[in-house]
Length: 143
Image 1: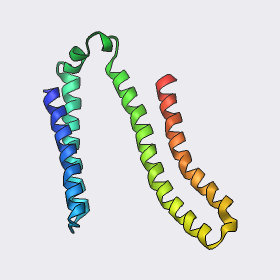
Image 2 (image 1 turned 90 degrees about the horizontal axis):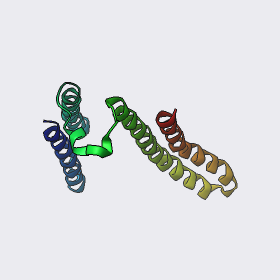
Image 3 (image 1 turned 90 degrees about the vertical axis):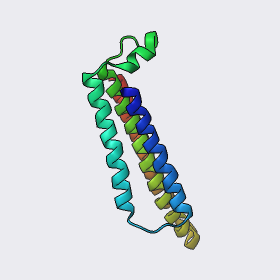
């Protein structure tokens, strides 16, 4: 059951990305929030199903892992999941922040080159978000 839910989640994720790329290329107009909500809700239901299956069902992934996964508990799995989410989401936030701050900084430096140092500080602050996420991941894993 767990493997089936995992494959279904992968299928939904890949399908969403492919549909989004196709819609972007065709410059399709519409309510983006509706499509994102539909995709996230389907993926969320699959994730909840996987969690319920892992908590109350037979753990298939532990048998597949064999000796490599010996001694790991569900808490360890959630610890690794939390560490990866903190780093991944912080990195996504950094990309968004550096994209907007960096383009504004380039425009400002183009008009007045004497403010280059000030703009680099703002770009560096935006890049610090990824470092904070990585520090939180290290704290989750080793403390």
